[in-house]
Length: 466
Image 1 (tube, helix red, strand yellow):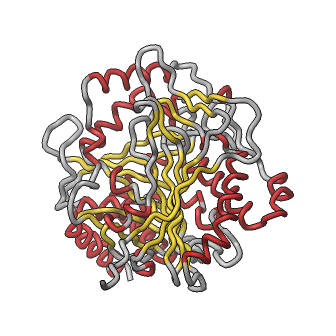
Image 2: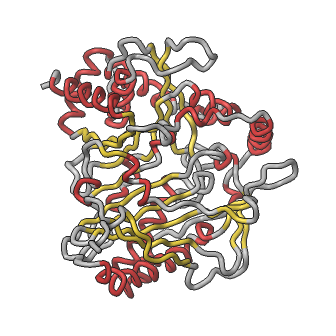
Image 3: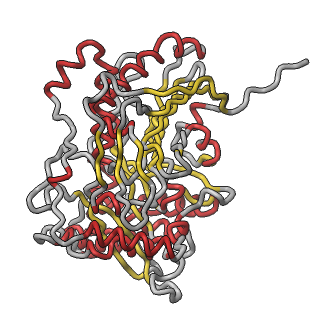
């Protein structure tokens, strides 16, 4: 009988990695109001592609590198033990959502092999999102869905090409900054081996003390009431962003070089007088491009009327903006939600960038980042129903540098936030592992026809600035 073709992904091993050495006493971390904003969100799923043509076979990884991956992950989890814990899922009256770590808790690790084309999957061009799904681990639920895992990891081998590390993280437990801190620690331990202790002693350990997050306005209890009311009403508006069940959805990356951003910045200033940051320029161009790709309509307005306004949302770091400031090494969520609106018909990159920049400038006002916090839980759902464009990730996280495994692997060739397929977001990162001195990567998931329209918008935009 002729051999059967290799399935796109074949699972080789499923195991569990516990913190080593184990933390002292069992511990529980209650969710703060910052965490509760992201309760009910899809988990954040990232893919890190590392090329290595010398990886000739699966055994090259399982006999050589895989034990080091497990050992370094266990050592990193010693410092970030909540990631090995369980998140309680009950939101009933009197229940307190928290992350509980008990002795023996672990992170599930899947090892698999893929017969797909590594070079193609790690590219910038439009790729069918269904090809990426097998590279992403799921978060298990326990006790009849009363709790679930916080983090899951998968290492997929592509013989003669490289590996892909997929991570799935519950957003109510950690934001991008905390994830980057964990990833940087894991990669450093893996990269440096026995010398890692010396480096870790110099690094700032994560801070888990919830007492540094002040909640004088009672936002935590208010958010709990909102979530209970929304659950009781059967609210499903977050599904308005989810494209994962639609056919023909593709993921692509568009690179905004430093030269392009400077040219766009000059154009925006001449059109609007706004002197925008590179972040505002990349977000503005992406927002306008998506509105254009949808045919000038972003869905329904937040009040249910026919849409005449385009909606955009981004997050801002609240650690330095809190009173008193929250230490930079605090582990958890610490993000404020920012909303932007503009006329959608004929929305240009200049108008979109200027609108975003005006909101960013307003954050300089003391207390502005948290002024509208009381409505965050409900406003997120309003934005989802309006199919607002939002942002995931940030160039400031520097994930390419954080994920440097050293040795034969080095920095990842490509980092993707695959979960933007379910969250209506554009994924931002610094410009690749080599960088160009200030460029920004923008990743997005759209139906194929809309992606082609976005690509045309992107090419026309920068052709007009030459």
